[in-house]
Each structure stands twice: as structure tokens, then as C-alpha cells.
Image (cartoon, rainbow, N blue to C red; front, side, top):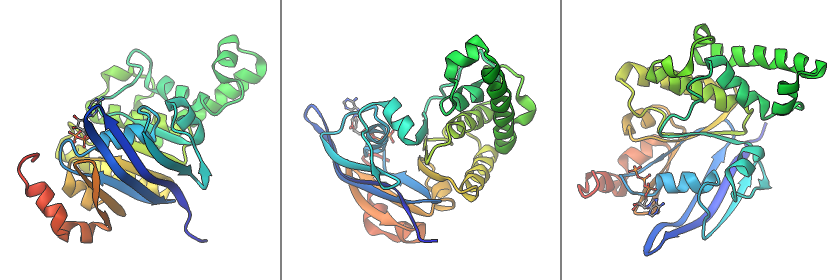
Length: 257
Ligand SMILES: Nc1ncnc2c1ncn2[C@@H]1O[C@H](COP(=O)(O)OP(=O)(O)OP(=O)(O)O)[C@@H](O)[C@H]1O
């Protein structure tokens, strides 16, 4: 089986008024990789992520998902193309149950959609049962199956992040994009997150993530791109990134430590 490029983005430029936030940024991710985006504060990581996922309009750039051009013109277009994302600040339906949160994600890919579910035709009822089972399966997969009936906002912080990941997986994405999934986690939760991401990779999914914890990234990513002041300064396997002088300088630079 040959390697397949799942995400191929080139030459992204993005300006905010007088600030050139991204200059000639690109990324090439192979299917089944965990791919990391790192860089000091203000390097442009979130901006690049927001461009990829349709939240910000780029000034230029080419975008391909699984060999097909996709338009990052709006978040729903990107979701339909097959990129699911999570956010730095957790965005769950806090008053719904844990299971229902994942079921919402499943509905993105079903025939009946939300209206079918509301009007409860027979076909919709059958599909609803299948969705419920699939949602439960995803909760087991991310390790929070026993909390299915709990109100989402009552989950611990780490488990809410797991729930977000389950909900994103429910849309059956080609690419899972995670914005700082370890933010606010303690060391134990971080290790558990790393295990989960490796498991997701082993299930055949591709993951792109931004993360500030460089050590965590080095131990988990297949490849890493480093941004500084909106420009790519290094790309490669963690062992090479760690030794790269430009990367070391960027992190030790102090101005944005
Ligand atoms: N909506 C916006 N309007 C104007 N400037 C912005 C906007 N979003 C980001 N910027 C600027 O673009 C630059 C890159 O910011 P960005 O948030 O992408 O960096 P980052 O690498 O994600 O940083 P951090 O690690 O702190 O999250 C910064 O100088 C920031 O102030």
C-alpha cells in the first residue's frame, strides 16, 4: 500500500491589517500520521489552523484533502470535506448528556439528519438506534463509556477533552485537527491523551495538532512543522527538529518564551 497524502496545503499567506501573520506556510501530511505544529507564542499556529478549517479567509494558498481540492471558505464546507476539529476552549453542549454530544457528531453523516431524528419516522428511529450504538462505541474507544448518561459539563476537564475528540471522530473525518488538546491538563492526563492519540492513529486516522508542550509533541508526532513569526523555519521528524539550530534559537530567543 503506497503512502497517501491526506492534507496538502501550500503557500498560505494571511495578513491582519499591518501584520503579516502567515508567509508562505504549507504542510503535507500522509495518511495515518500524527502531525504536529509548534512554535513560540504568536508564531501563527492558530491562524494557520483557522485558515485550514475555514474560520479565517487566507489571502492566498492551495488546499487539497485526500487528493481533491477543497475550499476553506467556511467551517461547514471544511467539515463536509472531511476535517473535524476541536478548539482550545472546549466547546461542548454542556447541558446535554455525554452520549447526546457524540450523537450530534454522528448526525453529520446520516441520511435522516437532525429533522428525521426530531420527527421520528420509522427509518429515523432505526437510524437513531444505530447512531446511539455508534456513539456509545466511540465513548468506549476514548475511554469514557461509563459516563454516557452524565451531563457533559459535569465531566472532569480531561474527560471533556476526550468527549470533544469522540464527537469529532463521530463525523468520520479524514483528518482530525486538535487545537491544544493538552492545554490545562496535568501530567497524568497528558500521558493518557498521548495514549489516546496513538490509539486513534493505530485505528487508521490522521491527526494534526497544535500543542505548547514540546516534550509531549516530540514523543508522539511522526513529523513536525515549526513556525516562527508566521514563517515555517523547520519541518521533519522529532529527532531532527530537536537538534535544529533555528528551532533552538526560536525557543530560546526569549522575546516570546
Ligand atoms: N483576528 C486577528 N486579528 C488581528 N491579529 C491577529 C488575529 N489573530 C491573530 N492575530 C495575530 O497574528 C499573530 C499570530 O497569532 P496566532 O494566534 O496565530 O499565534 P499562535 O502561534 O497560535 O500563538 P499562541 O501560541 O500564543 O496561541 C499574532 O501576532 C496575533 O496577534
